[in-house]
Length: 255
Image (cartoon, rainbow, N blue to C red; front, side, top):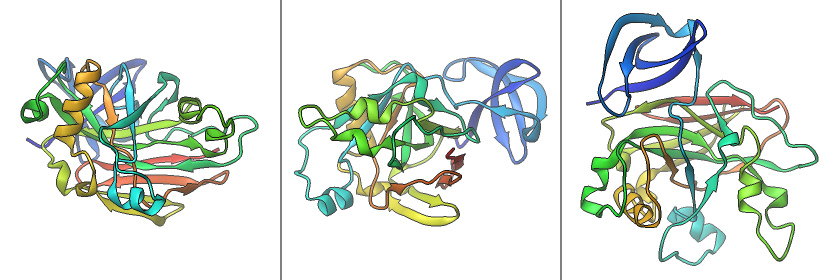
């Protein structure tokens, strides 16, 4: 069933619920387990959105799309290539992406995020979707100028782990078929990325299964599926929007 779940701050407390137009039906309990409506309906405009989950980790894929891999002349990976985004980088819809001191080329990467719903350890590909709760929009922000600055050590975690470098949201949407989704990224209203998830080297079930053999995935954890052609750098004051049908539009200004 298709629902759009979100987390929010209201009257000094953090809550969660389902989005219905410009209203939110508050729930109590566990978003990933037993929960029920409280009966309270809140106006979306009165809420401050949080990241849609509180992940114990965010896993970010590299070279997971045929189009970008072929454009860059990258070898075809035999297994998922990924890094972790640090918790200090998590950022909600509408919040400000901050520029790190001294760094120059900061790029956006619009991506689909897979949200885990059940503890997932060594799960077979055929069972992997049973462990997926839903999907969110994400922006895998990267300080590109430091990535390969030291010839002896590519700085993936640092380049992608600065404060505010992992916007996610605005909701987690359930009941979607990821193979039919398209990621559209706009910079100041201009489309820069528009690519199908069906072009992934490792589709969602295979990706979740393979990663679950490396590390246990917990409810709320997010796997960023990697990005495709069209990433670019942001200037101060830029608005970056990542839109996916059925999920909505994640928007953040860059400082």
